[in-house]
Image (cartoon, rainbow, N blue to C red; front, side):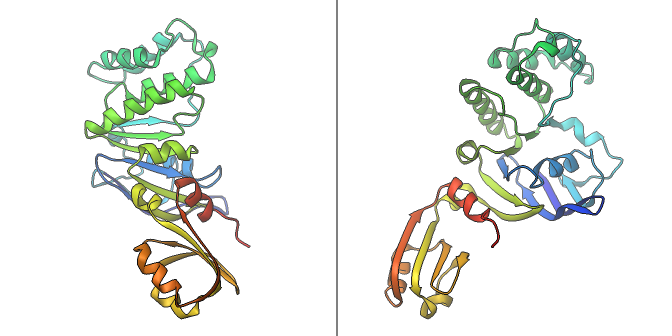
Length: 286
């Protein structure tokens, strides 16, 4: 449903995105993770054609051009910072957004308002950050789009509202919608998403299925492992003269038999969680 090829973005001489490539299959929730400044929001703004960029972006197998805006009709976009008309009341702002469409969107909007318990009587300027985020969710989903592009959508929501929002996303997925989901919350990504991409300093450093990613082992061997170096299906995380740390995706029995051939001094095998995998890939370069 979404395909990005060699996406590159400069701000002056600074390269914010460096040949980003990823594919989002139809009908899944795709997690996009990385800390502030990694390139998440820039990637999303390129997807929405808000920024100029180099490379190619395909939405539903159609190449998006710089002038193309029609594809946005089928997208629900929630930016990390929502821009609003603060003098309007909440209901007035929702009704204003409904005028952008030539079909009924208020029925869906009111369903979302009830689910999220959004106060319609206050002026937008009076809304708390959490309620402003609820308003953004309503605006993004009220036209029932087939693609949702959400940038940090749960920031500011209390835990109960986060769970309500997760249920909305799960229902959307069941209806066949495709969700591109940027988040700092690794726990919610591991609980919601089917696939995940990790971005670091403008480059994609890992794309994998969530169950595959967190089903792997993180292995640390201290001692000489040269004898089995080429026999292990591994992704090296850290290596020095006396130890190696790697992600192992094969059968554990096979690994243990291979390790028996080494002159190891110490061995640590850990079950991976998304948080651990993320931090492992995100360690500062020495």
